[in-house]
Length: 544
Picture (cartoon, rainbow, N blue to C red):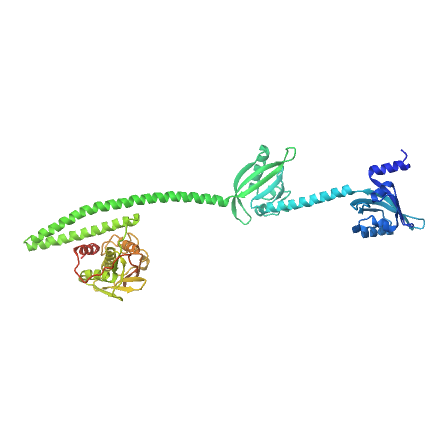
């Protein structure tokens, strides 16, 4: 092949998509091979002058190219420049690359710019495509990194030799190190020997079996916070199925375990409470049954005593009757005491099982309380204790259960008598507060210690626990009084000071029973036998 032959030169230029050009700086003309003209985007004519030369260059680069070649001429350096040209026919953009050098004459003046022109449009398109793909890759990589770092689970990955290749922020917090300080290191460089050995053992197990392994482990953070992690380690592979390394994900399950433990304890506690309720129900039923069983024979004994009392009254021997009545009175008083205890036990079972109810009627509460006080005044005064009743209102009709209210007042008066020595006094005072009625029962008795005040309304609690206490009692009377007051929608409280006395304060709301006419005492002060028995029962704990 004769390379000096223009035919072969032109053919080789076509094959390589390379043209030859030369710019005569004296005549300002450009000559080029046929392929050169084609690549410049012109054909059939020569480019004359700098203006024609610049017109083939894209307008956005003309100034840049002019400055570039002026610098090449000035310095004499070889030139290598890519630029866009405008097609003569359709003005489409195409990229070409000029390579060459500046030639000088014998006087050192620049004479020619000669070189090659190469179409690099496809290369530029590929570069733009890969540049776009690279930018998209960077964006997706950044998104993936942000996503992984936002996950609260601990995420890490290692190579086949258990050396770290990367991790997320959560794992950084656990290790106490930044990712760049973790990468390239093993667990032995980060954790203590025992912990690192365990991790290495799990890694080896996963690689050996080529399947994921999972385990739970308590770990400690640098701030000493402890957590239970559920860890899964799984292998990742290359395109040929060879294991490249390990991916690990650790989830904090501390709260879940705590909730499960709490749930388990709650279930156990529920079972325990159910058993306690069942035991309490059995106990309550026992009290109810035994109370009813006790009341029957006591009523029989009491009836027999009443009959015996009648017979003794008919006995003409006065001396014998006096002794006999003395013992009958003792037996009757103890029967009353037993009845009081049994009635209280029955009421307790009713309260506990929700069977206790009150029958409210519109009643003059002031007249009701006054009648109760007057009915026991003689008994109290025989104990050497004075009793007074006073009120700031003449009448106040509210909805109350008459029987239950009588029981409340009798119980509190009996309690005051128990602990007030001879020479003392008991004051009963009623205040009308519009929204409620306040009943105060105050004595000058021995008082209650401050540490016992919060306990006196509890069941089976007795303030005086000494073996020689002056008065008997089961410790459930005040508990029942509190329940009866609350059944009326009211409340009861106590004030006391040792050696100075005690004051019980009851508040009963002022409400009226619907469709219920008010009941008012007409002034008949005669006390019924039924009420006398109530007094005897409530005062039965007080011995002469």
